[in-house]
Image (cartoon, rainbow, N blue to C red; front, side, top):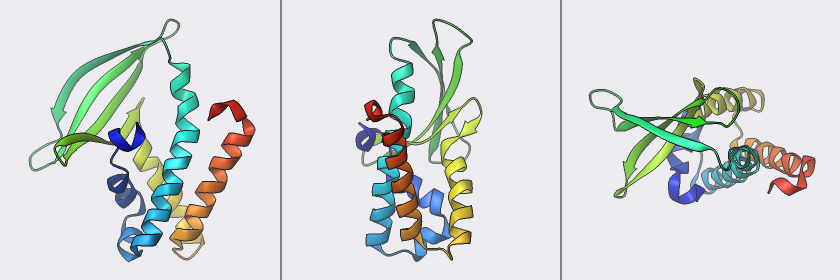
Length: 150
């Protein structure tokens, strides 16, 4: 589902910024594989929390002149507590719409990763493979912390 719904290469390009352009194809793929593994380990348990809740889809808006992106507003209506606002940033790729960012309560997943990983890349001399290793290790820690999570 993640591969079908998300444009991981676009997310990877945004997250790595200039480091993406400097990386070779094998390094890029290694980073994307690590990011995919981490994403599944991190977010699958969160999505499981909302099982049985109602997702209301709101307005879809063009992000502005010349933008290839559309924002789709939604909210998760929980049985207890306030609804959670979620914005899906999408674009068309190969005839299908793909998610490039998820903004929950005003916090962008892609921007958060970009900021977090930029710090790691600055500390390790821009080594994308080292970053991929760190992300994979983080995914393993997530799985070990709660083996039933994925």
